[in-house]
Length: 525
Ligand SMILES: O=C(O)CCC(=O)C(=O)O
Ligand SMILES: [Fe+2]
Image (cartoon, rainbow, N blue to C red; front, side):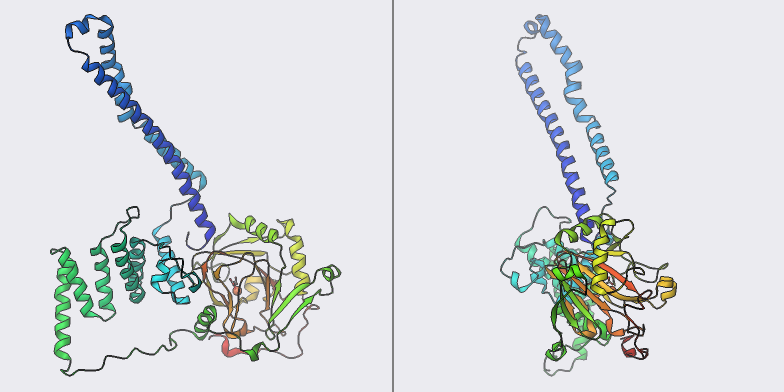
């Protein structure tokens, strides 16, 4: 699918560029044909005008010959063939479909369109983006002044309509209103489908009804009828709305009442605690308090590796217990870019679940692929660095997982450890430590969030985020629930290495007591 990663969209743009090139070829040929025909017609007109005295004209044998030749041959070759023969069109069609087949690109589907609408909506919800600003392409307050309207009335209409279909009437109606104001401002000729005021009203009126505003729904329905008095649906709705409004009038007491107070924004009881915290952490509303930060430090570390004494790692401690640390300048720009280049053409829609029965889901909207050390000897150096930094062995580690998030791409709160490690990982045991490389800078959004730790780690190109998922006794540490916040602008490339329990006995020895009972209450929160 095309909505879960930027790299796939790039392929679409390549396809579009190819189509433009082919169509230009086609047009050039067609134009040449037209020119030829015009010249031929002019020529015939001239000859016709000279015919004057038929006898004198045909008295010249040359004229007789050229006239007959013209009728037998020239019309056929100069006009009928190029105009009525579809060869040119056929060869154009063939070269286009051959080109598309070779590139193995598929046209984006309705599902792709819906996916990108859901992505936008997620961003709007998550980062509380006002519809007007989002429609104008303004994603952060800092960009407020560069309003270059980027969505057309028709775009806004599509988004609004899909949101209403998803029963998101509040945002849905805002997008439809935006469509309406854009339609009045500039009806842009090149965007399809072309939409009309009535089409917008057809969506907007029922949306307001769903939101409980029957009067407005009724008024907008009447506007449809003003424009199209015979509109069947609107005629039916008119009867319904009038009945509803009449009933409301007869039920309501004839005293003036205070307008209802807006309900205060309370935490959504439907939402899991971690989900609520996740959103607040991504938005930057919730951060570590000074008390939580007071024991954190930064230092230069060589981890007892002689070579690293020359250029020590820059360690930024983000949480003491559980251990979370940010290592800066671990990869060079070239290394980061090389990893992306290697995986770009291979990423596929990410799935979640245990191996064997995993599925694509909105919980994780990204694409990923795996890079095996055995097949990529150039990764040896990076593998070594990972071992130096973590002090662990990669003997039981997974291959590197390359991940790309696109429009609104995110990974909702989850644990990296599995419930049945034996089944998924065999002798290697569960995922002990996660090492996560950020391979590019993300202009807005895309932080890694730890809801229970009140921590949002912004991606920094070439840096490595490291945390332990298991307690020292190898029991699951439920405080390590984490997530990838939606990308608001740009694309996000990361690379995961999961170190496992096995073969780390001397590198991360067990504690003397069991941690089995610790933080169990967070397991299902
Ligand atoms: O995208 C992120 O920042 C987090 C990714 C993650 O948690 C994972 O891939 O398991
Ligand atoms: Fe994760």
